[in-house]
Length: 428
Image 1 (cartoon, rainbow, N blue to C red):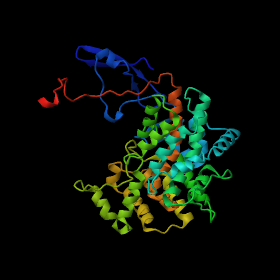
Image 2: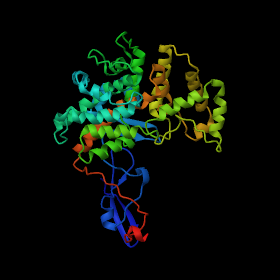
Image 3: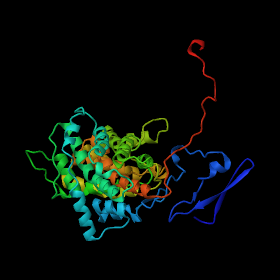
Image 4: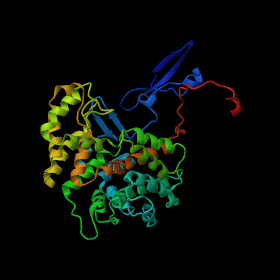
C-alpha cells in the first residue's frame, strides 16, 4: 500500500480509498469498504477492471506482450526449462535445485496411476462422449477415491492433492481419448518423462510400441509450459471461486475444466485449425484476408489477436519456432500446414493487421502442432486442461493460504420488478 488515496464522490459523500501498489503493474484502488461507506456498489461486468485477489504467481502486461511466471519470462522458460520444472516453480515460488527437481519429478511419476475402479467409471460414459465431459466427471470423482487429501486446512494434505492432480491428469486425459476411439487403456510407465508418458499412454497400443520422437516430446512439453498458468482468467477465477467456499481440491479443478470447455476460453486453437481447413489451399489465402478486412463480412481470422495481449503474444513467439521444428521432424506434407505458414507470413507483413494489433497468438500455432502430432481436435481442450491444472492447483493453494481470502460473493445491478404482492392463481 502507498500513502496515495483515490477520492470517489457520490452525491454529498466523498470517500478516500487507499491505493495499493504491486511489485509491477497497474495500481489498485481498494474499494472493499466502498459499499459500507456509500451504500453503492461498483459495476464491472466481466471484472475487466477489478483485481479479485492478491497473487505472486503470474504477471501479464498485454500492451507490452509480457508474461512472467514468478518473475521469469515465459519465452526463457519455454526455451530452457521443462514442464516439471515450471510446475515446481509455480507451486513453490522458486526454480528447483537439481536434487529438488529430481525428487519432485519422482513424486509426480509415482502418482500417475489411477485407482483401478476408475476404469469402470469410464465405461459408464457413452462411447462418443467428448473427452472434456469425461474429464469433468472423472476429476470430480477423484474426491470419492482419495479421502486422505481433502482436508484443505492441512498443508500436507493440500500438497498431496496437488501432486495427485498434476500426476493423474495425463492419465485421465489419455484414458478419455482411448475410450473415445475404442482402444484399451495404456498404463503409465515410470521410465518415461511426464510428457513422454502422456504421448505413450495416448498413442501406444498393446500390439505395438509407440516411438516417442524427441522433437514431438519437446514440442508438447513447450505447449504444456505455455499453457501452465495465465493469471486470473475465467477458468482460474472459477477454481478460486469454487475453492473460496471450502470445496475439496478435486471439485475445484473439475469446475475449472468445465469453465475451460467453453469455446470462448479453451476452444480457440480448435477454431483456428478449423479455419485453416476451411481455407484449404495457400492460393485461397488472399480471398480470406480480404474477407477479414471487410467490415460487412462476419468472417474473422481465428488465432489472431487476444483479449489481453495488444502486442505480439509472447507464447506465440516460441510456438512460431516450434511448429517448424515439428514439421521438419515429422516430414509434414499437408496443404493445411502450408496454409498456416503462408497465412502467418502474409498477415505479419500486412499493415492492416499491424494497425489493428492482430498478431498470431498461441492458439494459431498450437492447434496446428497438435494436429501434426496426431491429436484429434476433440482432445485440444483436454490437453489445455492437462497443462493448466498446474496453474489451477498453484492458484488454489495460494488462495487457501491467503489470510485475506473470503468466500466469493459478487453483487449485482438489479433491474427486475420492485416488490409486489402475490396474486392467487384464480385471480390472475
